[in-house]
Image (cartoon, rainbow, N blue to C red):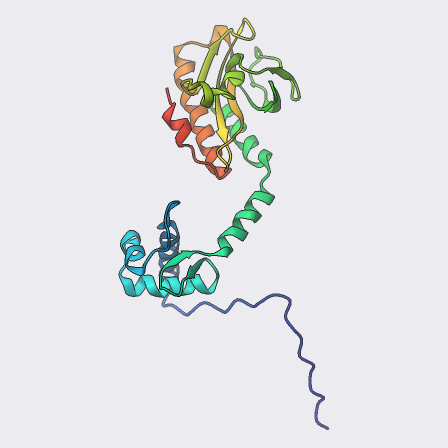
Length: 250
């Protein structure tokens, strides 16, 4: 007996066609790398870019650029206009939205604090601004016996101490990282730097606190670049631009 005809079903998601066969893994990696170079060729103030300009910026011949643009267009990463120019496509907006919704601050803060504590052997903390106060939301204590005693959740005045000044440093144009000695607590020195988010806003302040008797020139020379490094790296991880921080680098 003939088999009954199967009822066609509508797929819930559009299937992605398999990639074209290439001669090896090296070719695949090179194609991905070139495609990413094309996406990064677009700049904030650009209008539609012609093929010749994309090819020039990406350092690719026009045949290769056209082939890769076709693949990117098929997946929505670029959009080709009827007049022939190219714009970034809607898939990038969807991915950006997924990035923002999946972002968890602690996923970036805690590894940074762990690195700071491990490399400095001092206490590391992250503060956020709440109106005219700052609140400690993440902290790792120094492994040394003598250390500052502080608690997560503790609120302190804004504008005083390294973290309090760090959170407003882009407005006051204070050199970064901010370094204080006995300013909030008489026996504590601190180093702090703001962290920026994708909107260019201050997401918080990361830094190190050190008992003042231990804060000599060697510890300062060690910790200042560590704090700046982590602030810049976390800003990039949050989708932000660290240029404003680097302009104020001490």
